[in-house]
Image 1 (tube, rainbow, N blue to C red):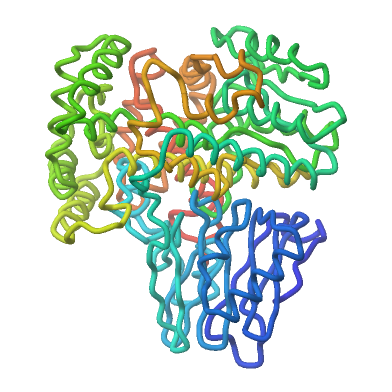
Image 2 (image 1 turned 135 degrees about the horizontal axis):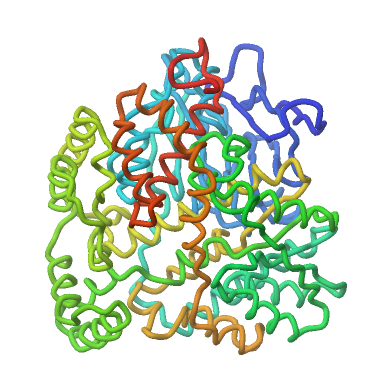
Length: 616
């Protein structure tokens, strides 16, 4: 393996490309390793049977790493290499094949392109396309699906945002054989075993989180943590105190004129342990609202929907960096794993579950000001709806987009259907997405043990988990210039496994908030923290930030690269923006995804330069 470049003079962000079979005269599968790699981010073991490489946060200690790698190579049992603590991509290279395992959350994907006699791999899709040859340009259909159908991974499948480059995502493995052929499969479905008890799941989650935090606390020179006042990040910070004797700097973002009450909770919780050093990162209207400094946002190889909050992220990172921090802990992933989607109700629409269905439907309906009978009816309908039918309904919705916003009741589905933003699509792009949905419906196979065959709540949970993993990866990219490595214990493989030991209806008990986490951390985290039942809401900032950045937003839409690719009609997007500027309801999540794609297209140096790259 080529030695990584640890200098800060070249490319700052860690990156690699490689291929299998190996190039003539090469003994390393990773032929180009560049950027500044953090300590432990790239590890390898070379034995008689081959080489084991991990990329990311593999927390195994050196002796265990070497022993397990040697055993796997000797016995041809490779899947146990996904059982080390942490979150990482694992690549195993042997004389006759290369096998890669992405982490369960999908924080460390692998990209690959098949070429005659050889498959190229890498950490960024554009770099893989360039290294492999055969052209390098964005894939308009994948970008459209990313913006308008983000909860339907069946549409793009394994395709990445770069045409001809495939993506190895969370829970999947890839094998490349000696003739260069590549096969991808799901190595762990995360479907709950029927025998697991609530006590077993709570014990497993408590132990997994404890280990994840302990191992990071032991490795960090200067540890810091998020402390939003929310349940996930605050719990991680208190767990950190169990493994550090020195004071722990913790950080809460707050803007003076916001109605969000996170700061009040954070201050109350910080008083529970004198070792906590609470730092309030104060935002300003002019500088840290969404949509400020958009052209300064960075992305790690893929579009970043969180780019609209780049100014706030930079402010937080600047404050954290002042403490000389090298590892910063956060709670990303906790919501996805511990707050089951409403579609879990479909699993109760069966004999033995009806009483629980009616009880939960009543509680959820009351909180959403809707009818319990409508909630129960939607759940029963979802229980009878196969994915193929849902895909055909999605195709119809794309071809005839409605004018109304999706209602909370629409979450009682396999995925939330496209909203009024689907009218932004050109007729041709809308037709292509609809055709993808119909093709997916026609290609459904008999049910098995794949995640695709699991209940709708599991599909939604894993989609949200992988969205969180992507956000964490983009945060790590933004933090690299500050010398900070943000890490999220909830995204670790063992934590994911523990959270999903139980089916969704057993991980929740409305109106209780994240009861599995409360049971898992009882006694380790102060009771007042585990008792919080609310979550901070910053949605009012979208409208304020859009008004302040109206000129920039109009310019991005006017010079849209997606319009040049015939994906969107800029006039339709502009009309939605003007509604938002007047304070009317607007599809901000879709707008944020649109902007993430636009910024990625402009920030990426496309070979030969073209209408979809370069600055405006």
